[in-house]
Amino acid sequence: MSQWPVYTGAAEPHDGIDALPPPPPWRAFDGGGDSPLDLPAEPADGSAASPDRTHRAHTYRPTEQAVQLVNAALYLRRPLLVTGPPGSGKSSLAYAVARELRLGPVLRWNITSRSTLADGLYQYDPLSRLYAAGRAAAQDLPSGGELQDHLRLGPLGTSLLPYRRPRVLLIDEIDKSDLDLPNDLLNVLEEGQYEIPELLRAARTTPEAHVMVDGSDERTPVRGGRVRCHAFPFVVLTSNGEREFPPAFLRRCVTLRLRRSDEEHLEAIVRAHLGEPDAYARTLIARFLERGNSGELATDQLLNAIYLTGAAGLSAGSRDELAEQLMPYLSRLAGGGERAAGDAQEPDAF
Ligand SMILES: Nc1ncnc2c1ncn2[C@@H]1O[C@H](COP(=O)(O)OP(=O)(O)OP(=O)(O)O)[C@@H](O)[C@H]1O
Ligand SMILES: [Mg+2]
View 1 (tube, protein in one colour):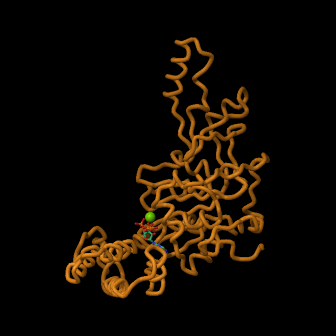
View 2 (spheres, helix red, strand yellow):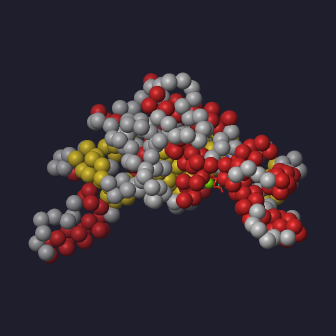
View 3 (cartoon, helix red, strand yellow):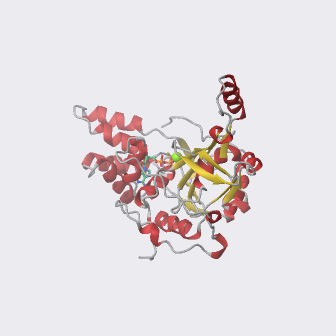
């Protein structure tokens, strides 16, 4: 079953990822020669995952274009840059792919203007190491100041461990980053590897360290201070599309532009979240589509409105009013659907 596509957008999880064809020769990684690691298991009862993430994953209804480009990124071992208006499903896509392809828990890195490449790779806390060493010495214990006990890989650093199957890495809201981050990031993703200088320096005496990884208390061996991926991670970078990225960055990504959903897609989304839309839900979908011509609205506003107005005991009048208030514009669109400059932050306005 090595046929396109591996990711289908169907709701049922499967093992199609094992039939993913080998990477193009310029994207072949070898994991540094060690035997590959198995993915961490998703907790069987879903207890560690938030209900929101679990729900998003199985209710996601991708467009045909999204399915195609997710597969392109998987086959090419390239990051997927997903742009689109708020609430268009950029972040949820990563969870949906992880669920369908059984790729384990999603590693999530939320970007702010202060995020640096180093935060994504690993955090090392020399002070806590110093204290631990001091405490151990005071109590006459053999150690306590071991480097590996004070070093934890971040989401990016964890995603590049030599896993047999790709990890899913969501780098959320890359448009919020400092100007340098996209290029720094791309260098690491291009190489599929990085070094941990602290471990590299200690490699002569400690050739193998067992470091903590993102999102779990388990430890993973790192040899010689170098991490090199085996299966290239499935990386989703999201952006609201207002930021221009450098050409060098864009060239190395597969780009998916999510647009406003049409009626059929909205109905499928509502069905997935709340069941078959009734007559009133359909009028709300129509109103949402119409209002979407003059301002920006997010899909979850529609879901909230349909959910709440389905509550028993609401009079028709207050139901309409409530629906209206639950779908305020996030920003105004100027003229032919283009965003008006400078009013992106404008709150509620009818
Ligand atoms: N294609 C879709 N199928 C099912 N649900 C969807 C889809 N698109 C969006 N949603 C729902 O809409 C809500 C918003 O989605 P999500 O948070 O992924 O959007 P986003 O583009 O990341 O938004 P933001 O720009 O605010 O981060 C979620 O509740 C999600 O489940
Ligand atoms: Mg998002």
